[in-house]
Image 1 (cartoon, rainbow, N blue to C red):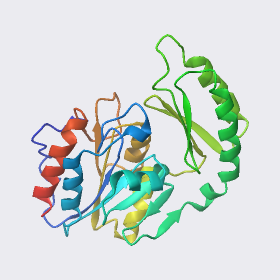
Image 2: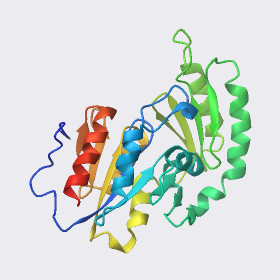
Image 3: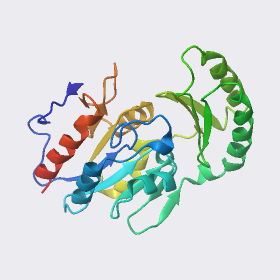
Image 4: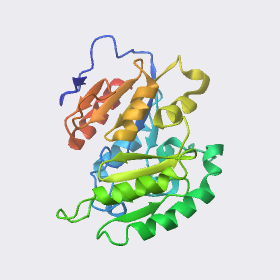
Length: 260
């Protein structure tokens, strides 16, 4: 995996002057710094201005591809003309406002509600831990757990809880978060492919993210896509990486120059 330096010069031959791009950007840890609580995360004003400029390009479409619920990430970004993808690709809203939700994910909503109630009881004895109910997925955040309290016992209890519904849901890990999602062959990469539709050969997908669910998307998009990991991860599925979240803005500036 090559590191994209501040100048963000891509290898020769990767930039195609007549190509068009579908740019997928994660929110937390990519467009916005990670906050102690999800509700506190804010999109930097300069990044919002860059997104507005990107929506004007003829050779690019821009999607915000987040693990947050669709309505949540849409409210956090608040830029018209974008595609919004929520719940790790399970919800998609196009610029006209039409919403698509993965039909099999919809069928797990009653189960998710039951799991949310059970999880709320499980985390009560762990200070700073809370459950984020996103309708068709759940997140258990433990970033605020005191350092002298181990998260391992809680993780074991959550694994046992999810094991009772293992044929319908799956448990994955992220940055100080455990994600409970429908057990489907679907992720951010598949959502990008759905957006491309029959235009795959004419459009180059670009996915930028910083966490494990982005890694799933990188792998699903394959070697023809431009995939960028924000921050270091050994054995990342991404082709390129940025050193940190602060380098995302220079990358967007680079795309604005190259995709005019």
